[in-house]
Amino acid sequence: MLQNIIRALAGVAAIGLATALGGCDASNISFNGKKGVPLNELDLNGPAPSVIALLGPDNVRVTRGDKLAITVDGEGADKLRFALSEGQLGIARDDWKLGQSANPATVNVTLPVLSEVVLAGSGNLTADQMAGQEAKIVVAGSGTVEARSIDTQKLKVDVVGSGKLRAAGKTREMKMTVAGSGDAEMDGLNVDEAKVDVAGSGNARFASNGNVKASIMGSGEVRVFGRATCKVSAMGSGKLVCENGVTPASNASEDASEQ
Image (cartoon, rainbow, N blue to C red):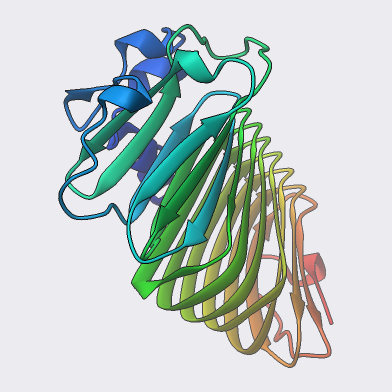
């Protein structure tokens, strides 16, 4: 489980957000070594990104379209900075620090395919679709990600902190880590095979008729809707609830699972 938590944090650092998470302001942040610029200075030529990373308190709405387009509305729009690099779009606020409140702006992004989102801070990111062979969602901080329609073979989910993920759709294989007090509310997501790690008081919910393995440390809960076969290893009061499914006895914590 520890390795998965480290991997989740590394996913945030990999796009250049580690400095901000350490308390520095976003003006010092670069995405893949590229410093953010105002929207009117951003070069939109070249391939459209499939990855979006949001740092700060702002709102991002992503819709599917034929080509890349970005618009900004609301107070503080002139403070936003953008970077395009290696298939990733980074969005940050010039004068924002972790934990600082601000009136959010709204960024509207249109692109052909979205396969990965990373949210760090208190902002909100909504995507109408996520697709591709593999998809990834990282929520780090207190913000919310809403992925309304996921259609992918493999899905990785990392919820680190007190943030929230809402998701629906389908995937063949899911690996998920919840570390902290965050929630993954994915009642409308159907998963064939799932491996879930929970550390802390966070919760996760999704649907499955396949196989689900959960490792829980703390008071968190994993709830599975459907006829899945569930196996759990738990330390603490956390539990795996496999509704209408089968939960074989676990050597690690038999009383921490329910049918």
